[in-house]
Length: 114
View (cartoon, rainbow, N blue to C red):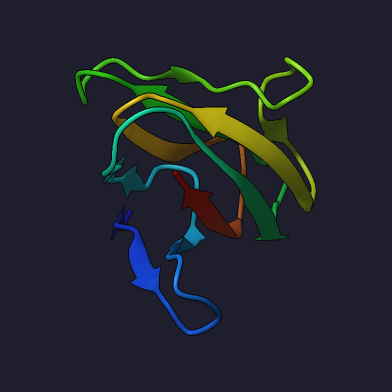
């Protein structure tokens, strides 16, 4: 079991992309503390080898208690296959969570802007 932290990537635009690479069931996944004020909008892309895993995107205001974030259509950001979701959030922390997989290695790429 690994500890996976988001890595920032500025290679495509001035706005950062945050990437959690090769997360797997049982990993400890560190949250991203978002900066800025007010609501942010963005997109999350989830892809890789799922091995029956479910990946959800979660948010928190205290960094301890995380809850599923909803997309712009008010559906939980949750998938068992490659997908992209458009989201908005004013929460302070955000992170993916993964459960139920075997031999899974999933990448989560989050692009957010104020």
